[in-house]
View 1 (cartoon, rainbow, N blue to C red):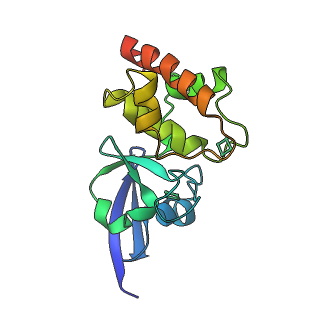
View 2: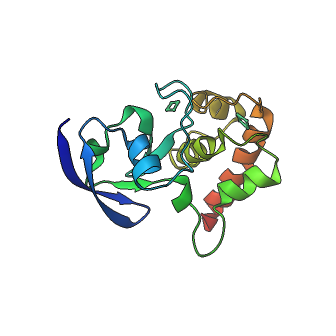
Length: 160
Ligand code: FES
Ligand code: FES
């Protein structure tokens, strides 16, 4: 094992870690930082459950080495809400019942926020296309689309 010392900036807080250089960001978040909101579904880039933001862009944390994101701003589902309450996307998922078991939900929400901020959620077809990397075994897809449409309006009004 090759150990590396690094500082990860997660949800506005710096964490000093010593890790095997091969550790993924997903495992570092869950196993080292106890941030278990980010889920491990397939662990091979197929399901989107592990989606987080790095410098505002969505990435699959199971395919990203922790050492490769040192110095970048990492946001997980735990960092999305602020003192003002839930993020509009979180609220919209609740309002529209956009989950059943909830396992895919953190990844869905992180992807959905990025979709809106990237301007890729203007139509239902766009939402379905740009959210297609996030699988939901409970098939809550129609409710997820409805939630994203509501949150898009709220976020564009500047309530994000
Ligand atoms: S756990 Fe990363 S894409 Fe499935
Ligand atoms: S809510 Fe169960 S997998 Fe999506």
